[in-house]
Length: 306
Image 1: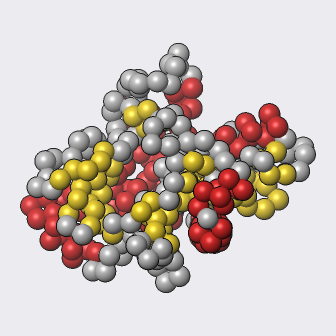
Image 2: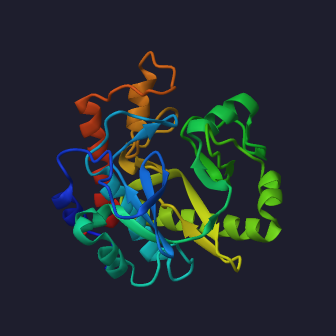
């Protein structure tokens, strides 16, 4: 079964955000900002809640249906790339998932069953536009995390080509930028080249598809893992509003911040508060919740379609 269509997703978005997963008959091995992870025999079960985080802090209230939207958008990209890049989904994924969930089958649209792989300790970030931490770095150094870029660029301006700007994958706190040389040394030259090539190809594919849907992919991050034989797999999620900066093409005007389909809407609200960006996070007002949900759904509608 492929990813759900936009209409199918809209029909099952809950009225209330699912912040905690009901008690499942499996051992929980990790709890992330958004996902709960369970061990199920030879596989892991990932359940995407509706929690939302910003500045590495989880907000006390969530966005109804966000976990479903993220899961289905990621599934869409897994389906489109499976012919040339192995991913974390096992064969007969949907049948296995429904069997494992049993009475909790209603969670299926927000669940992913994945192979047990060894995650690489880097986040593979690709940037096509100068925004966020990339813009901050450029203003301070005139470079992009150690890489030369032209002078005179403006905020949200298009870069001359896509840049690979990996970061360390912190187990706690903030991820830290790293140079290409540091990344290659950490991963080994062979794995680094595979990650670089796959990331650039994924980004180019995402840019092309998103352009057809009227969306600019300003930047995005990918994660990869290895099996016991050292084979590379795409893991986690790909080209979703949580892992990417999506801008509506028709509203794009370089020279400042852009309207977006991602959680930048939440970040912008939080930036206007007297909050020191440490836990606990502030309660999000209903207008921010609804605005974020609308942006996530619009991204799904544009990308996945019917």
